[in-house]
Length: 414
Figure 1 (cartoon, helix red, strand yellow):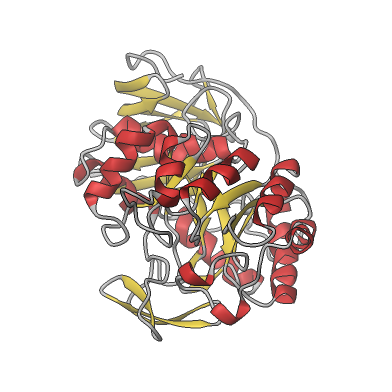
Figure 2 (cartoon, rainbow, N blue to C red):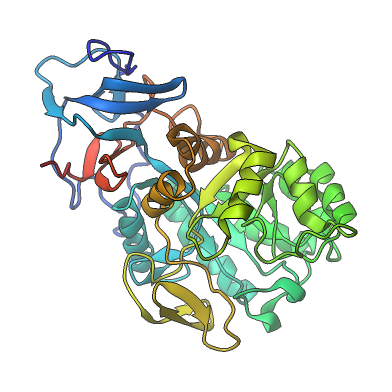
């Protein structure tokens, strides 16, 4: 592994091959990527699970990080830069002008967009729609998950509260009937990663139990639950707070609501959208102080406009206006997801929020990898793990992205 000095490095060799075959829509390995071979990155501040190694090095062979620099490896001097694990986004609706609720090519466009911003592992999120359309989309997304293009599917809606619907179509919302929740899980063919629901609705607690029994993350969000109802949902198996603070009752001294219950329970990981729009810095600091870095997962909650620009977009069946990077529904003005990418979330975390770099890495890589059950393969720079990494300059601006040993964004060095 990357060590205390430049004369030792992370290790492993070979890599698990991704799913073979698949459809013509597969995001082909190497497409648009810089050709790579065995290589050693030297001189960087390498962020490891044990801390940051200054002037460290990291060796890559094949798709994995390796402990011994491969013979004939190309050396790349990245002195003064930072090497951090590839980012893992568990809540993302699209980007690059395309949506995960769209066609296969739309989905691949969104994946490419976020990979170019350092997100090497991504869960595709849907939005509330007709049940038959969600089932159909689950089938398409599951195929791409089987091919290794995404890490799973997150269903955000339709099992959410009309009182806290946010940018979801109210007429399409429904109670979380366990039979209907099971229908979506089955349609995902083993690739359902998470379902966001309002546990206070009829069937909510039973649906949480169903999800937990099937190894799917039950996330509490878009909810009007009381403190007591949220505690009951956590006891039933809920383990994630969908974009904490947003689309739920505010913290109140007599009615603490879901925020207090989700923050205080060590079994819960809280999602935070760190774009400077969804959260006041004091709210983010409260979450980190109370939950600790080990229980925070930064997400984008990105919609189509991420990585593009202002204009009119669709979020499911609803029209969205993006102005100065802020997405709002045309009708009603509710915030409609974000235009965030995780490289910007990381940079803001360390430069504006003044979080330690190690805490930012935990929130953007290690914690979401753990939630997905992928910590043995991704989420940290360690021997034998996938060579997923992000290269940042001294100001924490993105300068390179590697995924499974290949450069998605070739190093941009002086």
